[in-house]
Amino acid sequence: MRLQGNHRGGAAEGRPGDRRRAVHLELGTLNVELPSLGRQVFLTAKSAKNAKENIESLKDKISSLRSLRSLRLKTRCRSAKRGRAFTLVELVVSMITLSILMVAVSAAIVLASRAMPGAGENPSSAALQAANAADRIAAELESAVFIIEHSQSTIAFTVADRNGDGLSERIRYAWSAAPGDPLTRQYNGGSVTALVDNVQQFVLVPEIRSVTEAYPGTGVEDAFDSLLVNNDSGSGLSDLDVKSDRWPGQHFAMNLPGASMGWRPTRIRFMVRKASSSSSSSVQLQPAGLDPFLKPTPAVLQSQVMDGGTLPTSYEWREFSFGGLDRVAPANATCLVLKHLSGTASATVQANAGSGLLTSSNQGLTWAYNSTKSLRCQLYGKVTQPGPTQYAVTQYLLGLRIALKAAAVGREVETSVQTLNQPPLLVGLWEADFSTDPTRLDVNGDGAGDWGVHGGGPMDMATVSGGVWHTSGAALDTSPVCDFARLTIAEVRMRGTLADASAVFTINANRSGSVCVPLTAALQLRPWGTQTLTVSRKKSDATTESLIAVRGLPAGFCDVRLLIDPVLNSVSVTVNGSLIGTYGYGAPATTTSDRFATLYATGGTAEFDSVRIRVLEPQP
Ligand SMILES: [Ca+2]
Ligand SMILES: [Ca+2]
Image (cartoon, rainbow, N blue to C red; front, side):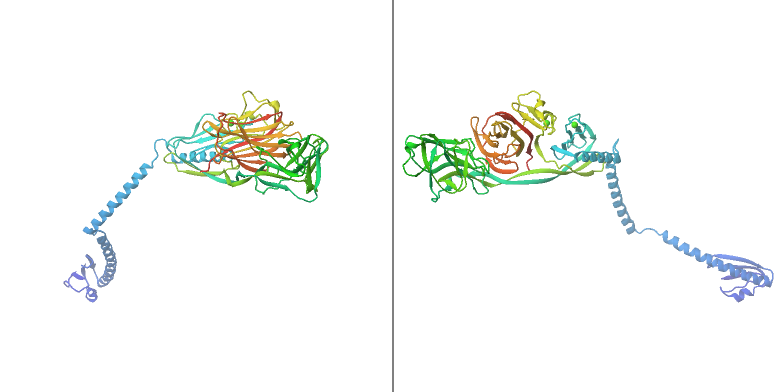
């Protein structure tokens, strides 16, 4: 501090902080220079007291100026730091950083611009539209009864009747798979309407459950016959003449291996000798009746005349062969009957200890069954044994996942639905329970009646009552045409209602070009009150071959199920829930051009309670 006095005593100089010298200033104007603060302070002292006050005032001012100076210095230092220039290195680094930032920002701008909605597009409304459509598909598919058609971008199905006309409704959703095309909906074959415009993606992913039915494979018949029943006991022997009032016979109870699919008789042998020279008997095989009667039914399967003149005078085995008899179910028993034709006694046969000896005193009208004796005889036959296990896979639609994206900007919506009915995946379906006119049914959802009266014309509804179709002449054909060239399961509940009348189901299966395999299941009511099911195939245009006969079925409705495998050329037969067997039908060789299945009656009246034919989708 430099004090400069302008007073009478002359200038006084002093070092900064030299208070004493400053305090001794008395009069005049005091000019205080404060170089370190960059200020000058002027004070005027008019008296000593005033000078002292001035000194105190000066001290205060200096103190406040110092504080201000200190603040300014700090502020100035900060300003000096902020204002410092970039170095070249800093400048280069910052320029590189900036260029990278510019590139990133421009890329983001390009992406954002691409995602910008076009004219008329609104992301939120597109997503809402897609969500509504997916929900609608899910809601309708939930109650689907039959899946008519399905692919990655198409689903068509039927649902139960909604409008009370007794017919199920058909709904179809489809997208062409071309982005921009609409998702369409069609109801009962009506006009195709756009449900969602500008669809970018529509993907249907089914959830499928496969149920595999394993069943005994195509039966193989023994190449040579074998002894099936042997009544050759030498104990308890007695003689029986064959006379008009005593026809002897034998009931053969079958005891085949458990897995057998059937058998057919080939030979009979029995002990016989001459009774009188000019006589003859008929040696015949007749089906056995039902347990517990165990007696022959009147039907004669095959017979041969035994000339008494050729018989020896002492017992010997005589053999009679039977050719071409139908294969019958494993449990179906048969009977040997020795029918008297001429002479007092046409032959003498031998009885022994055993069971099953039959005698009739009234020419076969009634029979007595002997449980302690048998005819001394032997039965030969060919047995059909099962081949390797076969499989039928039915697929069921458990649910569907639906992914839908509407408009380029739209968010993809995804939903999934579980089907309540778990409909099977079929390429063909025909059903009728005869509660209504079957020709009006459209269960398979093609917009046309599933059944047509064979030869045309309307259904005679007088023949439909109580959920049953009674027919004697009319036949019903399936529609539309079908080759039945995939795994086919036919289930028919039917019966013959007049003696020897048959309820018949026939299907032209396994079509391959111009040829097919007509398979027929005929259920015939026999005069003695049981029914016989015969499943046969047309081997060629001229010949029919029986595959299996199941005798002794009850007279009421019988459930007949045929499982047809066109790859293995086999038909598996189940009656009233019991598998009878699986039978090969050979290559298609019949030239009928009919491509349908038919229900009809032969030989009188028959009834149908229900029918269902399913053609399964192949496994993916
Ligand atoms: Ca309807
Ligand atoms: Ca139809």
